[in-house]
Image (cartoon, rainbow, N blue to C red):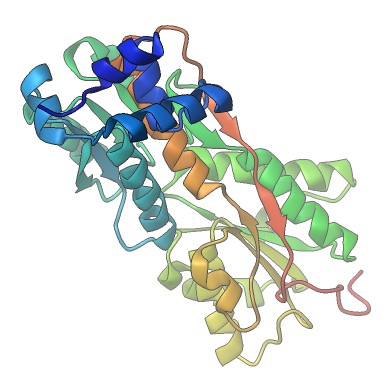
Length: 333
């Protein structure tokens, strides 16, 4: 019979939950304790076993993850982080897409419940607080970018947006447009708030004709180019809800002969892998995607184990300046 977490816990004189967390790099466990338990596990020949866990707990040793859509590279990176972290806890991952539809999201959650998952992560929830009313009927649920929900992990969308727009202001831009996403309400509102706050801080007018709504896709970014270029006078910079919108916009601007950043500076949000390899490379706000995935699983594990002192987390962002932003053109400052 193989070595179990309980065996390691007895040897280390700690609880089995401490061993589980140490082996999964949980932030609540000290680095020294993690080092000692990992070394002990190695010496004892411990190997995680999904089958053993399933037999002991009478469940499927799985967690469910609901995403909005698989085509967004940011979500692909986030799911990858969730899956890697889940494996260290001994879980496999089931995946379903909601396509930004609240009814489909709830249907997916109940489908996971029917498959006896231990917990569920919902990315880009359309109902957020609604899960509090359903909590007694469902397994533990954690959400992304829903800071009002008590079991959530968010990036600091407001501060990230502020840094992006402040960067443009410091380059001399005074007519700065914003392209939002109608499909991501919570994140969109937070990023728009950061945009507005910087304008107000510098006594710049908040102009409704410089705020556009799209769908967060490459197609949406391309579609907004015509509207942007019809503004009188033209904006000199644009802050986009995400990198997909920004890159779609960059393609459309290139086709119309608009130079970036000489004629128009562009900033995205997310820092997906190919943002750095676009031409010119995209200035963007980096989300801590890998950290968010790990934190979501750790938070969910705390809830599964019955922890009652968990709190929502807010993770920092980072402005990454590349080639799509530059000084405002002369006469437009």
